[in-house]
Length: 232
Image (cartoon, rainbow, N blue to C red; front, side):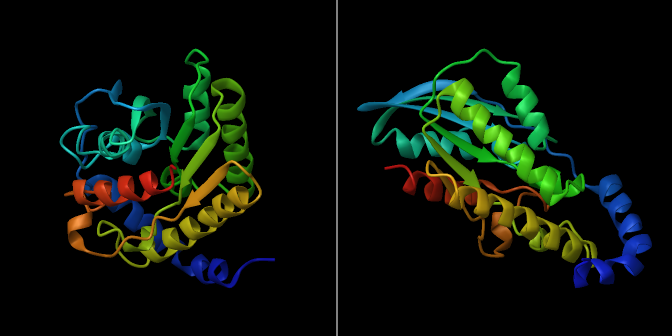
């Protein structure tokens, strides 16, 4: 059965196509920040952390990795643990891209994986069924190839609030983002070692980077703090 919002979307297709093309042509392209993508920090019990994902995991919107998700999360955790960490993230990556990237590196052991994926699955029109299958494969790969014992799956952001996106494009991608986020929520509910971490920050303009699409350092701070609270 076709959902009501899908029916409403059909007359909007020409408008959406024009808006999407204009966004791609005019969007400010921010680089991935400089800084270490592997390392160790802190003291105490050992904690091996793997961060996987797209441009947000890679820290786009921050000037350095220390201001980005990985640096801020490691900073929080290093107050309690001796953290060894690795960042495997790339601008433009959807779930299948991250699977391919992880398959290309040697197997090694980690305790916790943080995942930040979904936005590019939305923009690439990945279906719910495809997303569920690919995410399930990714989670299995993390367990079997990397020994992961806890998965923290960051939710798909509420894309309708991204300043870059005009209406009605924002409304449409927001609906699809919510659909894929429900997939992550359902997978986590049925996976004992996984947690779904909703990405529902306020609409404060300071939380958006200068491109109106990626998180700012302030948003990365909130995100890292939320993730750290889920690690005992």
